[in-house]
Image: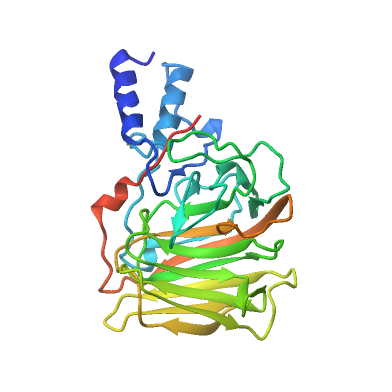
Length: 327
């Protein structure tokens, strides 16, 4: 059975990982047959699972790095994900749960891990609108369930951190008015700038799938942004590709692609060169009207291919990210 000393140590660990302002990330629960079984019985299983979600070492034989590693050595450190397995791979992905700020904006209903589902070959991100009356809800900064189930968002996030690389996602991005699908590259505390590629973009003040929004933000808060007009529209219910390439050479640049066509680049107001996480996001920003129940975004594949540029940098502090074990 679990000893009193182990129980006390684990309780102190959870207190250390209590929610705080910023991102709360949890690992998707593993299948029962992937757990470590021993003579200690079911209580030992519960201890291992909670340890994974809390962002601590699950043991030398677990096969899971629960904190995430900085991977800036080159293409060998990347991955391709086609979501072909029966569950979301916890060695690659975390699930966002809780309040998250991006460039000062927030999904009013927070990010909810139950808005993320996975079947072989497809990842589904759900966004709950103003008409939603179901039970799925996020938590506040203290880890308490929100009083509303409306307007919650969904995101998966790389467990590992990357710097210069190609970042790509493919899927069907069409959704009710107000929903934005985006790729973010950001550090957990969003303090050192970010890259962002989002659909729909804007034609003047009107959201349009014939545009994509591209943004680069420096640690100072200064940013560059454009709503780029496409020759085609992304609302045809076909599969489309969003991608950006981040270079940390002496000639720093962020290059944005849609459907394998290079569209635009920024060379000013670029983020820190320190490694960060890729987010795949579906959300409602701030008070954007959302006259629907539930929107579903289908993601078919994603990959990260690091370049290993000389300017890449790691940070030990980021590796202790604010993971949270939740019941």
